[in-house]
Length: 342
Image (cartoon, rainbow, N blue to C red):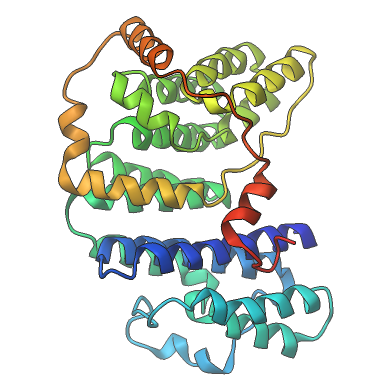
C-alpha cells in the first residue's frame, strides 16, 4: 500500500478512538464492544499497510501466543491523545528501514495490543461477536463480513454473512449482507448471481418507508458495483445507481456524475465509506437490541408505494439544499488534528 493509504488508515484509527471516547464512556457494553471491533480492524489495516513490517512484535506482546486465550481483552482502548503522538511518529518513519522506530510507534498507538498477531485477528474479533447477547450480534457479524470482503477473504465473508442472516436482518443490514454475498459469489465466477444480489440489496432498502429512510442515512457500499462494472455489466450497474440516487439523495450529484462517466464508457472512482459505518452501527445496535427494527419492518409495501410516500415526505420537509463536504474535509472536521488528516 502507498504512504497515502497508511495516512488514511491511521486517521480512521484515530477517528475510532475519538468516537469511543464520546460514546462508550457511559458504561454501555455494546458501544464498547463495537468500538473495540472497529479499532481492531484498523489496527490490522495499519499493520497490513506496513507490508514487510507486518510481522513485527512489540516487547509487551512477545509471548502472546503462549496465552491460553488469545481473545482476552488487553484493557481499554488507548485515548486519542495518548495515541496521536506515536501515530505522528509512525507516519514520519514508515518509509524508513528503522524497524525499532516503527515498532515503538505501533506499540505507543496501542496497535500491538489490538492486533498482536495478524493471522489470529479474525479469530479474536469473532470472540467479541460471540460475547454479544441476542440479536445485537447481527451488527457484529455484518461488520466482520464487510471487513473480510475488504481484504478479499470471500470464504470467510460468506460464513459471517450466513451467521448474520440467522438474526433476521432488515433494511440497511440486509442491504449490506446482499452486497457482501454478491461479492462472494462474484469471486467464484458467478456474475449472474452477483447481479441478483445487487438487485436484492436495493430491494431491501425499498420494502417500506422506514427501511428507505434508514438506508438513506447509512453509508452505501459500491464495492460490488465497481466489480460488476469491470465485468461489463453497465446496464445493470446504471439501473442500480438510479435506484441508489433515490435512496441516498444526499449523494445525488455524485451519483449523477458517476452515471455520466459510465454512459461515456468510463469507470468512476466510487471511493470508500470510512468510519461512517461505526456511527451507523452504533445507532443500529441499539435499535436491534431493543427489537425496534422488527416492529417497523413487520409490514411490507410495494416499491411504488414506498417511492410515492418518501417523495411526499421529502416535498413536505423540503430542507435547504447544501453541499456535502469532501471526504477529506469531513474527516478533518471530525478528527481535529489527528495525524494523517493534515
